[in-house]
Length: 169
Length: 390
Image: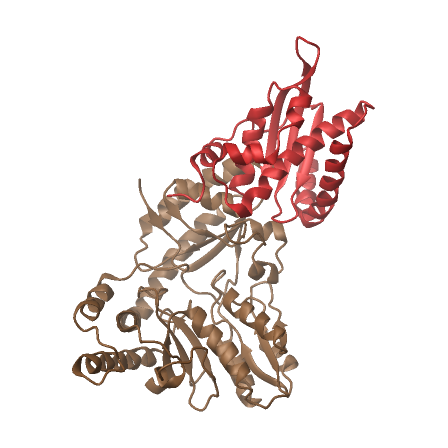
């Protein structure tokens, strides 16, 4: 007996694409206000045969609950090899549907994974000086607002992490 | 798969001796305590015997005990019943609670606030202790009730109840304590501790669910939540749940018999557990190192989220709970841990391990065997762990 569906537990037990990418082409860092989850999504961008930009590699790191971890893992498996346009079309409902049954209170965690992806793509386009769709821009603004709050809440952890990093380098 | 239950603070299994004692009152002696015939009187007699037994555990008189359905009901009755009886007149509407109460006390106080009562919350120190001096400072002529949890259900910290009780008694203020976690586990004396109202629960001490008690010191003004047929001195209408109460009393009797020995045993196991937990790098124990219940241990692990930890332990057959809240019912970090000064992410990373009567050394060993790897794996996923060598 478990609170979560088989599909959620599968990804939670053996999350796919965990870790970071060195010198990523895109990085999405998001946090969720409500439950304090934090998620980093790294992308390596390449081109397919038709010359369209695709997600060549993807990795993630998540501080969060079962659904948050499972969601990011699921999303990474769904976007790998997809064009950036295709990847942007994935919604939180797609994730929820794949997981069959997500407790209502946890649905927002699915949004967090989508936000991380949007943020990564937004940052990538911006870096390249490309045009950004109003929809992506709106998503970015919302994620940024929530992120500010999270940074405040997790500041001690981020500081500790930076401190330790310095200690080792 | 091996299954290890380490969530006794959530609920306990019914002791087989308790179940055996209850059975005749489900099958044959099923009478209604209010009935005049022999079936009813049989039930009435055992109800009063049960009252004697639970009363003796806290040095109360049997007529100072009412049985309820749960600790939640007892706490609701204590707070609302006392407040709405307006013991000091209609202008005295001030209530004091601690900042680490169980949600049923917090929510009752919130509701009373909406009804026009003034609520003051007492801060706690980093160990979760209320300073009795603070109680002195916030009591005023309008104060009618102070409610402080005896032992925290999350971190196990035991409050200086006797001192707080004395302060309240001297100032003519009712004092209530929620003893759901401590009743039957550590000695309680309502007389020497100056307690006016005390809540206890059956299912935390190997009794069945569906029974609780409220100790009401003689002379304490209280109005009932449930109006009905005059049961429990008119303070709690409802046909009396005799089987559950018989079980509760038997459970209390068993706890009383072995209290010192069992506390010692659990303390020993708990100490071993704490020692083992602290061997995991980046681990911390929440709560008080001095004044704590022997069976509740609350720990946290840097960079790891509590709910994930609970789920991973569940995969290994180990049942614990999170002080964090990304549980299924609430997303907010634990108000108890936040009150002790923990940051939200630290509170989110906490794990409550609670031991009990059927916990063995091998259970602790098993937990300590699987936990380090689980923590390690979750840290691998965490974005905060980089360059921390585990």
